[in-house]
Each structure stands twice: as C-alpha cells, then as structure tokens.
Amino acid sequence: LDQYAVIGNPIAHSLSPRIHATFAHQTHQALEYGAILGNLDDFAGDVRGFIAMGGRGLNVTVPFKEQAWQLLADRSPRAELAGAINTLIIHDDGRLHGDNTDGIGFMRDLIDNHGFQFTNRRVLLLGAGGAARGLVPALLTSDLAHLTVANRTVARAQQLAETHAAVDACALTELTALQPFDLIINATSSGLTDQHLPSLPAHCLAAGGWVYDLIYRPAHLPATPFCRWGTAHGAARVLDGLGMLVEQAAEAFWLWRGVRPNTAPVIAALRDQND
Ligand code: ATR
Image 1 (cartoon, rainbow, N blue to C red):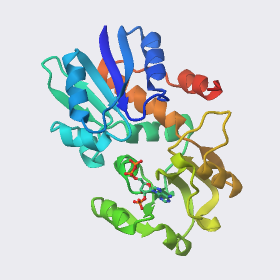
Image 2 (tube, rainbow, N blue to C red):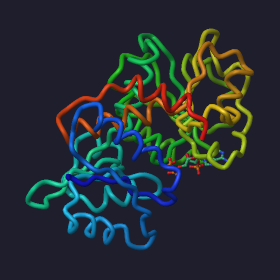
Image 3 (cartoon, protein in one colour):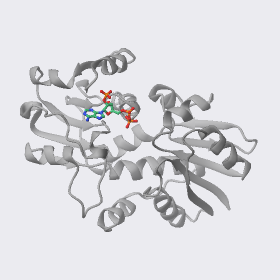
C-alpha cells in the first residue's frame, strides 16, 4: 500500500489520519495514512526516514511548516508566497515537491461551505505568523475591498504587508481608529493556549460581520475565546477551523491521488463526535 503520514509535534490528537482514511475509503484508494511524532531537532532526518520506507506523501503541521519550506527547493507558487509547506509530494524517483493547501482550504470552507461573499468586504486578519502568511495570498485571489493585517508585534505585520501591495498593517492596539470589518479572522496562536486575545474594540466588527477562528474545538468543549468574542459582539456567523482542516486535507489528497473526496460528510462526522 502507498504510505502517507502527517508529521508534527505534538501529533497524538491530529485528526488527519482519520480524515484521510475516510477519504481513501470514500474514493476506493488503496493507501495507508499514519502519524509521525517529529523530532524537534531533526525534521530533515524524519523526512528522509519516511522516504526510505517508501513514503509517497506527507502533511506537515506545527511546528515544522517553515522548516519544510527551507528543506524543499521545489515549491509551488502558493507555498513560495506562504513561506510554509504543509503538503509534501514524494515522486517515484525520490524528488520532493512542496505545496501549501491551507489558504485554498480556508477559502473553500468560507466560500463553498458557508457562502461568504468577498465582494466589497473589508477583511481583518489577526496575526502575522506562519498561519497568517498562508492565508494572505489566498485572500487576495478574491475581490475583497480591503485587507488589514493586525499583529501584536507591528513590525511582523508590516513585513507581511510589504510583500503584498494591497495589504495594510497595524498593531492590535491601533484597531480602535479603523472602520469596522465584515470579516475578522483569527490567525494568532493565542487561542491554542486559551489565553484571551488582547481586547479588540467592540466596534471592530461591522453589523452582519462574520468571524472565523483558524483554531477549532470539538463540539463538546466551549468555543474558542475568539469565537466567544464573536458571539458576544453579535457576529452574523461564528466559524472555527474544522472545515478548513478538512478542506486543506482534501486538497492534499487531490494532489497526491488525483481524486477529489467529498468533504461535507467528513466535516459533519467530526463535528458530531465527542472526543
Ligand atoms: P503560527 O505558525 O501559528 O502562525 P507563529 O508563526 O509563532 O505561529 O505566529 C504566532 C502568531 O500569533 C503571531 O502573530 C503572534 O504575534 P507576535 O508576532 O506579536 O508574536 C500571535 N500571538 C501569539 N500569542 C499571542 C497573544 N497572546 N496575543 C496576541 N497575539 C499572539
């Protein structure tokens, strides 16, 4: 069987093996998909080991996406722009190709699964790390009216804005002075540790505005702090990152196997389960 895996650290709670097993079953693809606890000091060695075992593809997750980008010289344009790789394709002759399906996974979830319309919308992206970098090129493929990146460390937001002409940068503390936004995306890692975001001004969210947290929580746990902020401030839709997780996986599956799985039942099943 063709071997695939997700590599990260930690990795025990990754949903990727379950998602890809479901995709494989659905599309009648003969493959195995495992999970690798990556060595923090030897990511390259782990990748080499997986290739030596005959591995065909890897998904890369926290904290190795930037290292994967450094390791692979052959990258897709969207991975190049993101500065991060989440999908690695291993060719028959052992050559490696790196791609990044996070941005398109996010857009598919927001637009195809939830019907968000970008036309004339003002979008605020919180955070300027790897996750935010992956989203910016994808967001700019839409016809949004305006994209602002706000970050705790303003220099990082400015750096991100410099590489994309149509993007404004500011510090989180400067948001008070700005017009409200129709979509606010949390791409900071702060919700992972359950710290609260520094208080966003209440008027930041426009009437009818949506919020989207890249982080997700199983249904039986309380919503993420950012999702709770959205609910408390009257967001028309409050979305977390589960749909994006499944959509980025589907795009990786398509790159590897040339078949597109049906994501809706997979998202629904993960949403309903209680672990
Ligand atoms: P990732 O790959 O998840 O994006 P990262 O590159 O370390 O991880 O970036 C983390 C992001 O979350 C950064 O934008 C960081 O802000 P700084 O650049 O100022 O460090 C942001 N972040 C992390 N903890 C935060 C907190 N408690 N409040 C606000 N922003 C936070």
